[in-house]
Image (cartoon, rainbow, N blue to C red; front, top):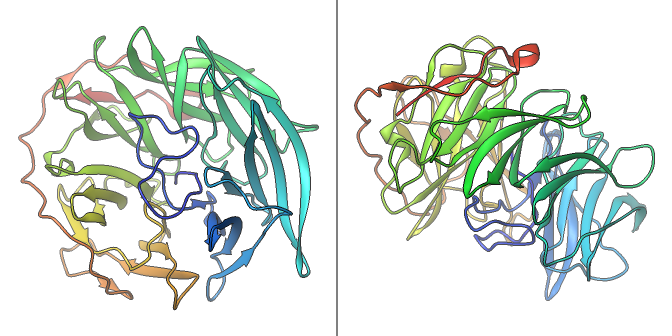
Length: 392
């Protein structure tokens, strides 16, 4: 699950990187109980909290004393409050919003001074449990990990990483191991920041010295990891998958490459501790005719392309452990909706509650069996065993 808050579109907001994935239309909490987005009323923007774990989803508007800027980030916390990240000159202001009868309560958390010309400052995806929140502040030579909510006082730095970092993926359910993509010497490699050991940094993914290797998404229950690298095809980045703690290789299936389209994983089915190959992965596919949904399982070696619901908050969604994909959407008729898709494993046609009509595309044939290449070992044995090997 990725975190941001912009109107449903592929536009980039504060902190987006040119080589990073497009930002989703809302942020969904790690456990899926809440979501948050920046909604619009005419020309005015305001935060909105969605409750997703009840019989029917419902939204609560949380307008502050003045409209928000369109690039403001919002993120749901585990207790239902919404973290808001505002920018004023070189100050990044953080506050918690919550409903108070007819109005909105606001608890200021403090500010981080960060010059605009040094790099971006953006929230990382919601922390499992939702008690804390973190942000990456990119400097000229280093990146600082800030805890911006859930600490004993206001925002405070908790780790400093050499290089310029982007992304952010949690590898565990405790909110301790944060994988980030670090750029040093003109190349990008995924590393792990251990927030329980003073920000200790360990290498996670290096396929070749001259390749760019990123971790996009991880599912802590199964250890399934989605990566993007240009090592298998120099000059072109491809999606691949592996399993933390496994001796099996990471693979780059041909079905995850859709010509002329950008494919971004945004949700992985939880609860599959012993069967990572059967985990369902939701993919955002952006093409010349719009955006739609792909569903893929490593064991199936094919992608099923599905129309997204009308008004989908593009790139946002969550899986239930039972294999139901929930996609938040908003239209004039349904301002807060949750489309539910069940995608079976046996090749039968999926059942879905919404029947929208965005474009679709045929998946290419699977690639030939890959051959293994070495992978630098990451010292994560205390949590995930050995890091996976990688194949081209």
